[in-house]
Length: 319
Image (cartoon, rainbow, N blue to C red; front, top):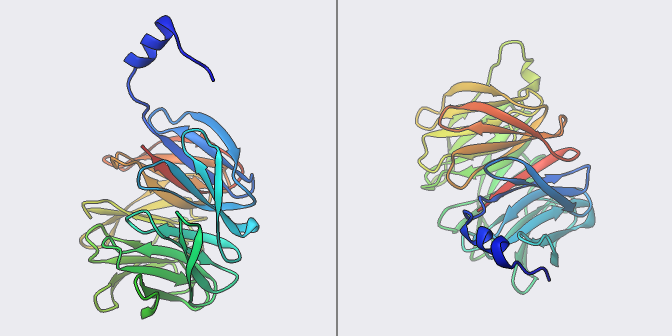
C-alpha cells in the first residue's frame, strides 16, 4: 500500500474532488478505455473480456457492468480500482442491457437465444428468461421501473415486459431492424430507432400508438447511410440526439415537435451516446475512426475528438 505523507498528503487533501470518468467499451480491442470526464484525457485502459459491447454502471457509480458478448456473460469491475469482480450469468451473446432504476435487477438482451435474461446483481442468479422476438438488442426501462422494453431486430418489434410478472404485455411493430429504446425522463414517450428503416418511432407507452416517425436527410449523404442507432433524450425533454451510424452524424431533434433541427458531424460510424451527469456534454462512440466525439449540449457543437481503442462501441459516464 502506498501512503501519502507530509506536504504531498496536504496537497492531495486540498485538491478538488475527481471530476469523474468516461468508460468506453472497445469491441475489437477487447478492452475498456477510461477518460477523465472534464479534461477528456485518457487515464488508462484495462481488459474488458471478449468483444465488450453494452456498458453501464450501478446508480452509485461503484460498479461497471460490461456485456462480454463472446464470453457469454456480464463482466463486472470496480470503477475506482478497475479490479474485476465476480461475473454475472447471461444467455448467449449478450449485446445490450439495462439496470432497473433501483440498481437491481439487470435486464440483458441475448441476441443468439431470442430471450431477455433477468439477473439479480447481488446474488448473481437468473430470475427469469423472457422469450422475445428474433435477435433482441435494444433495452429500455420506464422511469418508474414498471416496464422494460426490448427491441427485436428481425421481428421488428418493441416488446413491453412487465417487470413484476416478466410477461410481455404489449408489442409494437416498428420499422426494420430496431436497435435502441429510450424513454423520456417523464415516461410519457418511448423512442425506438430502426437502423435499416431509417426512422425513430415516437411511441405513447400507455397505448402503444406510434405518434410520429422521425426521418433524416443530409445533403450529400445517401439515404441508406442514414442508419439510426443510439438515442438519448435530455432530462427536461427539450432535445433528443440520434446517432446515425455510417452517416457520421448525430441528429439533434426538438423534443416537442420531434423535428430534426441540426446534424452534427462526428467520427466514423457513430454508434452509441451518453450524457455527462450534468448533461453539459454528450459523448459518442465512433467505431471506424476509433475515437469518441465530445458535444457541447448547450451549443450543439462538437468540441473535441479523442482516440480510444479499436472499434469503440458503448459509453457510460460515472461521477
